[in-house]
Image (tube, rainbow over all chains, first blue to last red; front, side):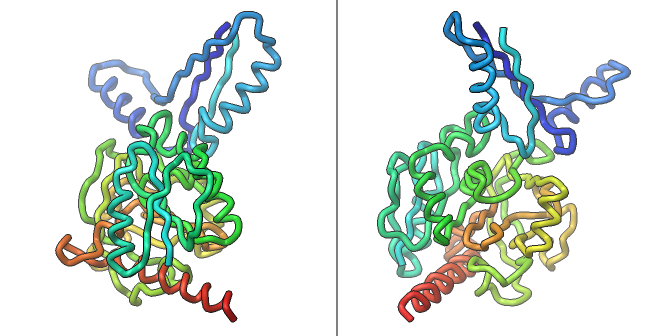
Length: 80
Length: 236
């Protein structure tokens, strides 16, 4: 089993990396790009047979406390 | 006065902080991140550096170290805590100070002298800074852009919690004097109770004329004065 956590900067937070990449894409001729947001992707391996609901609860807790900073970041959790 | 200077793996301004405190005749000792107690302490300095390699986010791992639980308790009991640079990041991650520090807006690491305006003398960290004095102190960071949501920012202003702001040589809060894109040119803040403060610049690196500036001493003098008043009050 695997948990995937995608962390992105909150919309109100300055994202200079995203802006720089967006400018680079424009310079390369890629049109229609209206925004680039750069975050983090974390993969967590879980023991086979782990209870999905319990894992989801624990990982949401961990994502809020450690893996993301709720002041500046949002996260999305998927368990598969 | 007894200062405790925390030491995390990859702290690199810990010795500078110890040196600055001793320079003014006070005692300072290093406290290892695995220690669960601070011992006899009047003030804690969370120093600059790259605690735990800045892994995940600056300060994110350090906040869970045993010593930070002791610092939290110390602060909750009214103890004075100053976070410098990475120490500021650690204190925001630990929830001891509001907001967060994010990547500098130009994505560059800035290592230079900047000018600081003291926004209020009403704090244990700024009380002795002469009125109108512009402090010249160094910065050295890649993630020093202060961010807080609008509600938090309004609260900071309403409570006079903004202590220092980046300015030009004559004290104007201009955008070009802002090295990292911090909201409202914020370089340092304190908590609502005013006993915990953090700033990105390094006052401990500017306490002797030999180092190019001794303006940092005013911040230390403010802390010494606050601790002295506290001791007098406790004895009375």
